[in-house]
Amino acid sequence: MPQDTIVARLFARANKTPNKPAYYVRKDGAWRASDWATYAGGVRRVGRALMTLGFEAGQRACILGFNRPEWVLLDVGAMAAGGVPAGIYTTSSAHEVQYIAHHTEAAVILVEDHSQWAKVKEVRDDLPHLKWVVLMDGAAAVDDDMVLTWDEFLAKADETPDADFQGRIDALSLDDLATLIYTSGTTGPPKGVMLSHRNLSWTATVAMGLVDYVEGDRSVSYLPLSHIAEQMFTIHAPITAGGRVYYAESIDKLRDNLVEVQPQVVFGVPRIWEKFYTGVKGKLLDAPELRQKIANWAMDVGRAKSALTNAGRKPGPLLDLQYRIADRLVYSKLKPALGLGEAKVCVSGAAPIASEVLQFFSGLDVNILEVYGQSEDTGPTTFNQPGRTRFGTVGPAVPGVEVKIAEDGEILVKGPNVFMGYYKDEAATAETLSDGYLHSGDLGAFEDEFLRITGRKKDIIITAGGKNITPKNIELGIKQQVDLVGEAVVIGDRRKYLSCVISLDPEVAADWAKEHGVDPDSLSSDQRVRALIQAGIDTVNADLAQVETIKRFAVLPRPLSIEDGELTPTLKVKRAKVSEHFAELIDGIYAG
Image (cartoon, rainbow, N blue to C red; front, side, top):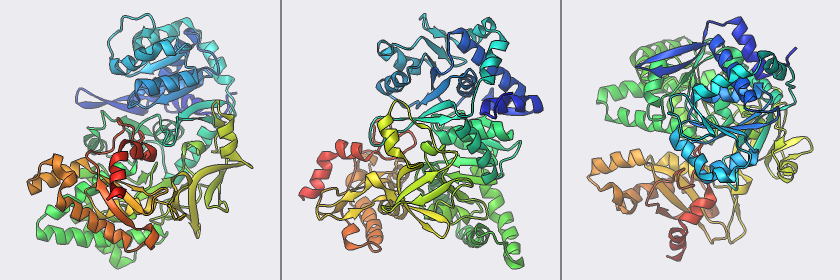
């Protein structure tokens, strides 16, 4: 009998509810559903096709493309065939694609289209293990013996008996390697995080309970599937609970897709919630005075109710009446316009989010729950849960997971979600897994049972005076004070004092430039922009010790970007790259 893997759960789900919708794709102006029988059948064909191509148990397959059913079918199909999938971010360069594909020794790579195939083609001579490239559905055929269209690939399934494929499923063990998640590489080359079938299935079960995820719940898949959090919300939890996944058309159409789908479960990185925050805040400020007063009253009511419900308490009769009025006047109109009209749980993760953003949304009857974790523990370590939330913290430990703080402040984690180690890297594994605990690299402290993140060990700045400073909260504070700021990066390692380089938010900056009649290209030197940023920094400095204050700053001539290597695909800042790319500007700060 197959063990309780995600693969086994998929086929059990297909047997239980074969005709219920599993996922949707938008085509010809409408959302087209595929049921669980089709989903499981697709995984079966993919697994058999891989076996026909010579894919062995334990072999690796890479996936390079935006979120689509084919991505997931190959991922689960490879696991079902006893293999190990590994996603590659779509923003990766040809060199980065080569690194992961070669490191995994991938025999097969699934690519979305010809632009992604071009990256593989460019480095194919440096991929000695690669035998086949498969194009996702809809991509035109390529005149190359290595490349198969999606239909040609699926046709290969007919050459492998179903019994042979079933044998691979039956042979899966919960302790086998199931998937590789490559880290975003903020401090060096990406590392392959090895997650077992037990890691995936255990975490999926726990995640369902944390967010009250039940059969039929809708979610929109749009964040990179190479990231474990999106895999959990797109693949593992929906298979486990019977959720319905809607594949976003693109990041540009995400807002429209959210409004159409009105998902019940919404996961976003802080940048997504910050964009919503900036947009709604701007519209409220532009509204007529009476409408502003009504909105402000409703937001006071929302925050009051949220404060109670977050503590597990119910509002009294008066507040409940005010809430129902505010819902009729404000929430019921605003939330559907954001695509959050039926959202029962909204989650923020992958990077820190400012408390002000969470407080703002709570005033709109949208409670965003912050989760903390990493690929190395299959996503969640701690989680703010409905009725058990404290803004400014990342919540209590996930049930079944032990979290403690080491003497130096590092967060240590132990539980069934902790990874097997780093692929082909025993030294890094030994450094990270010690005495049965995952050494997270993050610094934190508990407030009662709630964990607060205070920084990251590798981000600690040691000034020329020998003072140790964690920059995270300083940077968040600046972003929180000034809407124009896209990213703030504190500088000061081995320097006499702290400074900061600022990148402007492209959308907010464009609106500001238009409103003030300024050339957008001159904003980095505009004195009014500098005055706004200085005022925000002064406000942040007022709450800091003298050694922690920002003495000087510079505005970067362009936004930080994934393409230029300063941001990871999950929008985390690569400090070393920022310091390298803007070294002359930074030196100028300290030369003045």
